[in-house]
Image (cartoon, rainbow, N blue to C red; front, side, top):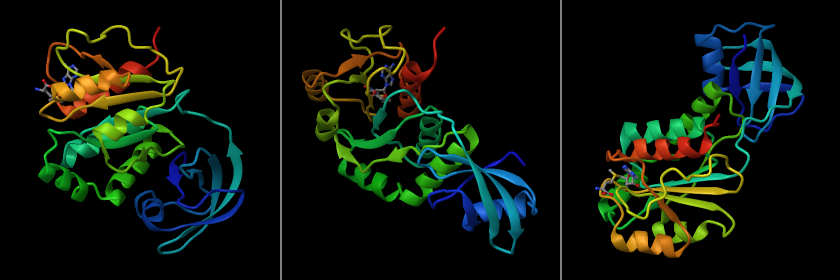
Length: 242
Ligand code: SAM
């Protein structure tokens, strides 16, 4: 059984008991039995092979036998700041950003994210649900490092938090000064990306971003929804060329 399972406890060689969702999946979906081999990761970068020793109604006991050396991370930090959409669109964005290797996703509050909307985002962003999406996405795509979901940040704080030595790209449609076509195709420095809310950025916000060293980028003549723009921009900087 060449399946990947997540351990919330840090992994090391030796015995390990899986409980909760992962044990349920092994026991009741995959009908795992003693002797089956599985792959485990703990979200901190490590990947281990393990063998199931025994099963009970709600727990799986296995022996972690070997650490594998694999790195499926991007060459440098990739931070995605985004005025998060709600509901299923938010979950979709988190799933795809994890698959593409985003290091940290930061929900950004802009002046067109109204007070009410910001409250809705907070209440509809229960850490557990989105964290589960990140884990499931990592299980599927082979990533051993969990994408971090940061606390919401104001636009001002987010713009200033990017290190001076970094690529900083702000998606902004139909901006005559936008730099389409000259995005660095490999992430050779920490790279920070920013996508605005449904109402877009205000002129003040783009002026402020440019003053902080951000470069605007036009993603084409069509207006993309927030999550589409976030994934298009992320793909532009992460996908291998040639
Ligand atoms: N009317 C808004 C405007 O003109 O900015 C549209 C906002 S769009 C629905 C939401 C966000 O997605 C934008 O703030 C921008 O960050 C990004 N976006 C959408 N389409 C884009 C495009 N063609 N080029 C660059 N960014 C885009």
